Length: 363
Image: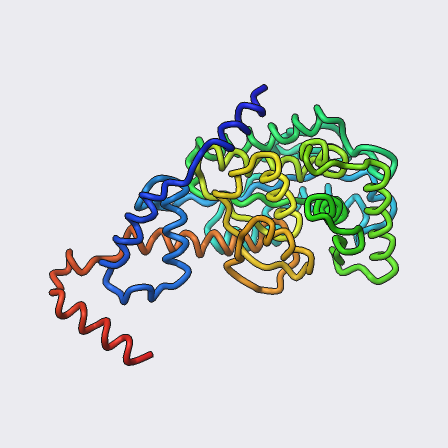
């Protein structure tokens, strides 16, 4: 019942367009030529519309990594064995993985969540939201029950809600689960109306033989489960993973609390797309950090109506691209909060106009 209420709230909320107009007008008075900071100005307008604050100030950035295993990973759809899910999660807890390094370089903290790892990790830093020890093999039937899918979404919601309550101003969900590009491909196929082959990417740069096996497994999952895109939680239950469901919950939490959330790559975007399908309106708080090297990623971004801030040819996942994106978004917030204005500086309108004209000539 809690989840249904959250979904309804998200469906009913609207962006604060007046706050957006206010920051747009305010930026005209900042001591710079109008429009000279390009996309950063667009970002600050979106931040105001999302939060309702003209000067939304981003200080605390948080990466939340959700980890879980998949029942179909035994078919060798990845370049890595299933055990890597647990090993990588332990690396996050030690602060040694790419996710940690990139997050730290961009001033973000990292929270790690066990949503369904096939094994146990004893570490006080790990948040245990384990639904069970990995999903079922979705080529034989649903990956999880409908109730498990709802529980996993709500678990991700609760973790994100807690991070927000502790002061996070912006959030980026990451993921770890060997084989999860396969689940993401299946979700994309349903929501975008693509064939298994059209929706299936290379993931961890697998070879042609492995890619064909992966596409066949996606095709089998679609045939066996016969998902209906008009029932998105059921689609998630049939084809998704616990870590993807946790990330869905993160997107819903940010939509409920009007907090900006940054999408990473292919898997993160599959969760974002699923969140939008479950609760239309959730996409209003989302920023796309980068265009993934996974070709199918762009299909998802188009469905979400989002344009990525960056194109770095990245494909690691783990919220690495999103960490960099958060830094750009924070920069946009700092411009509005900390840059002086012509009015405050005592610059006359004539001097202001002259500066703008000189800037135009110099282009």
